[in-house]
Length: 524
Image (tube, rainbow, N blue to C red):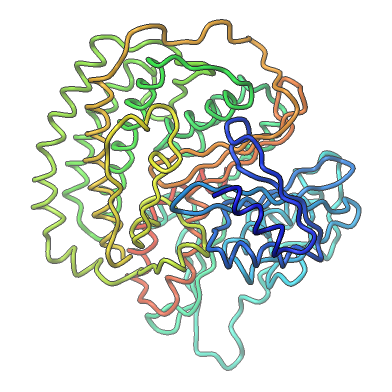
């Protein structure tokens, strides 16, 4: 597929010279450079070929700024890196928000952190920062912010003749699952427009990465998605292992899978309980926390933590699992299989729950592609994309499991998919326990101070919320020159303003909750 794509790009895109790269080393299949005047043609080609915009990021190389557009397909991995170099003194680039809806937010993020002005973008207001910021924080040198380039929401005001009013959903409200604010423009009980306001928990993890060694940054991963910390921990160590060509023993690969899938079930259980509480049903919350506690007891025994895990290491694990961990995991799996009938009676077959969630927040396949949503939200739209299967990592390629998809793309489908995914996780754990090999849990001779070769790498994993992508640029020092986290909650939240338009306020709460957002992950 890659070779055919390269030839087609050369034939159809003026001035483009794509080159095939080593996917094993880089994490993407081919790369090409473009210029501002040719960007629209390049992006139009990938849009026509039904690629989605996986990520858009910026790196400051001092002499120039480089915008990186990562395109991919849902059904077979074919990742393409498109690079655009721009002048750091006058950073201007064409907006692609009209072609890819997800770029609307990515470009705003780059604008406030790097000062890049995207011409044609409808709203360059800040997403995360406040009006008092006097320089662009991700630039390598201190570049002042012009007075006219400040955060504004001037366009989000009612006209003089409009019979509308505003409601703040959040930032301190259970329905937002964290410190998220959504400004709602209301016409009676119906929403005219929804505007998420981010940044209440922003901690500059990507900037921290530039001031830490690769080992020192390890604990940060669990502070982003605190409910799926194992997946973030796994994604980061896989990215660095790829960058440094560090081998991983088979035993460590299987233990990583067991721990990550236990954490996935834990995350889905918490979502079920919190989501139903949003809708007014408190009883299931008690049952899911009972099940979740069993997982936390097992993971605490090896990771030493019950929430913000940092169990994996470059080349393996912090420590090996013992018989108590294996026995506890088997006992939990047996218990959990018996619990699904309870949730079927209590929730899945409940006519009130069905009527409350069926037919709202419906996502079409084309919408899902344009916004770059992932995880259960993507699969609810009928797109069978799970990175554990289509872009397998660790030891997932040797395990059997399904990719559940929805038939309607509504909120009810996202619930059913997460229940099915918990069942699949149990199957994965059972197989991993049966195949768990002996041998070392840590690679030999992993350097205490890592100094990867110069270059970049992109690594993806499937978290409970969807696609996590980690882009690292190495300058041969012991810490990253640039690290970008493409997080699923940020991508999934992008579609909410469109889903909320014209719906009842109560339904908007149900739609927002169905996205399973983790706000520290969005704010990172």
